[in-house]
Structure formats: C-alpha cells, structure tokens
Image (cartoon, rainbow, N blue to C red):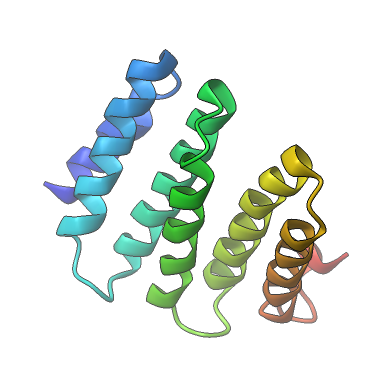
Length: 132
C-alpha cells in the first residue's frame, strides 16, 4: 500500500490546491506506514516536505514552511551517514529553509539555511561532482 500511495501522490502533481492537498495526504500516509528506519520512509518524508513547500508557494500559508522543515529534519535520520542520499536530503532541507529567509529578510533564517547547506556539503564525498 505504501509504494502505491506514493506513486499516486507523484502522479497527482500540481493540480492546484486540491491536488497538493491530496498529494500531501498520500505522502503523510505513506511515511506513516513505512517501517521507521526504512529508506522508503526517508523518501516519503522528503516528498512530503517538497509538496508542503510547493503548496506554501501557492497559498502563502505561514505554517507550511514549518511543517516542511520538520519533515525534512526527519528524512535524513532514516539514512546511513555518508550516503549520497543523506547529503541530498540535507541539501533539500537547506533549500526549504531559504524560503523564510527570502520572505522575512531575517538573518537568523538565512544562518540556519547556510548551516544546513554546509552540513549537506560535509556529507558529500570529496570526489562528488556536486561539490563543484
């Protein structure tokens, strides 16, 4: 059921506010039903965070960036240290944190985003082309 719901959420795509609501609901269900330490759970949490961030860009709901950040924080914990996927999830979180910094101009938000992006870089191997 988990993989099927996640595929459905990806297919729903933008579809306006209702489409995002359905996708978010599907990703929440998929993340909840995946085994706690499973790689799939990390993927579902990351997709949930992305959908929440996109919905915020459409609706400007002040709660969505917080929910997206919480989902992003939980995602890399499900992945092994040093994995490329972990670095990607940390980078996604840093990008999500950039949004409040851009909206408010608050230096603290920017500092948090930069710290998170540096953590992502620290988890990226020295030979990885994404470091360039």
